[in-house]
Amino acid sequence: MPQNRKQEAIFTLLMVGMMVLGMNVYNVILHSGVGPGFLVRVAAGALPAFLVALALTVAFVNRAARTLTRRLPIDKASRWQVTVATACFMMAMMVTLMSAYATAVNTGLNSQFWPAWGTAVAFNSLVALPLQLLVVGPASRLVLSAIQRRQKR
Image (cartoon, rainbow, N blue to C red; front, side, top):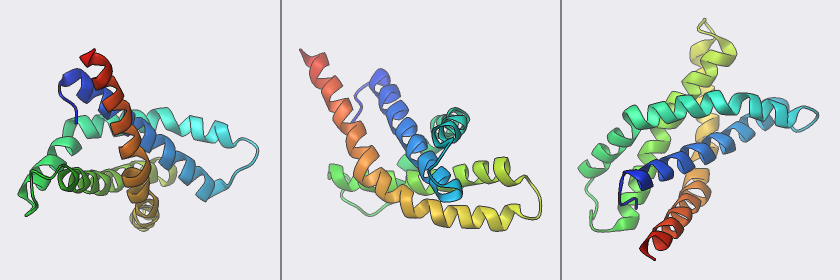
């Protein structure tokens, strides 16, 4: 777990960056497949999505997920229970919000928005939870623990 503001910033940048990249790759594959221009399509959406996701995370999602986790009837001394609960709340909020962002960008705010957003939330949830729990979360914690070990020297 981050022990100061600098570590919190690094951890947040890692988590948001990897989740945005992973979900962007998934959505480009889902909507247009892998082929000519694949990397261009992934790159084109990555930076704007990263900035939106970072702003949402810092302004709202981190705090809300921690508040909801504190209200759960779990063993707060159990690091893995707190970590998994927080990750699940964050994933649920970010999938909901970022799917709305992507739907608005790709479909517009018209009569197709709500059905497209609902579909996006459903499809994105299938990938976001395992990506968060099995790849991004562990990788981010691994990098953070390496930084913490280096700082102790």
